[in-house]
Image 1: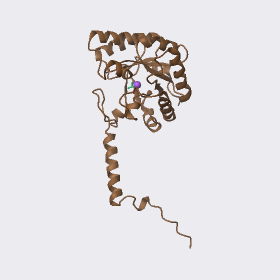
Image 2: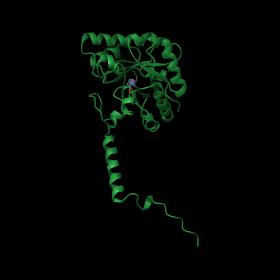
Image 3: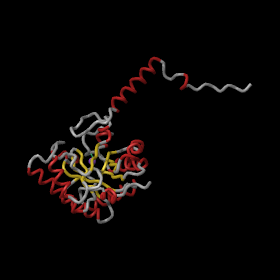
Image 4: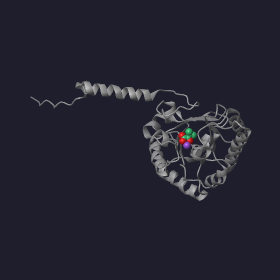
Length: 270
Ligand code: KIV
Ligand code: NA
């Protein structure tokens, strides 16, 4: 099977919900791929895989390495790689140069970048020059140092108006879809109804055209905190801890390795 195209994702609007999860490694991408329309190599990997406190320290080289890993495991899902903090905000030329590195070095289908009206010019520059852009508005984790934390947005009229204007600006600029993060339902609904491109929500209600979750969150592998919008489909973290405890006990009491795990010299033929 060929992987889903950007055009196919865009055409799902009004037809079918878009199913997306993050993936950072080849084996996880292999397991998630059959079930997803879109795999996102999110810069959340800084927090989820590397123990960083925010995504601000994630580098382009890290995103490319993990993008390559996910591409090895993705057979049918469209693969989008996040542009990390500092790799696109300086100028549209800087954004283009780094986006091309991501496309060329990973083979992925497009990039995602955070930002609303202030990134519209860059999104237009990229998307008219062959770089598909997934936009990202609402809560923008890369802005944590200036916006003051991870909290849902759109409670005040001022916030609601800004998010709606940001979404309209990135759509107008040529984004093929837009992630809406951490945004109250009425605002997410209004944006989803008014834009011609699909909205993909995370903490932005069922009114969006699709959903994305951080896979380690939904699998119970990431325990630093659990936002309200996460639904846990498994408790793999607990399973890993229990497995390590069982192994440690077996080694210490001498019951592992057992006979079936042990090599013996071959008997010589008579
Ligand atoms: O980095 C990430 O995982 C993301 C998604 C949560 C949208 O940007
Ligand atoms: Na991200």
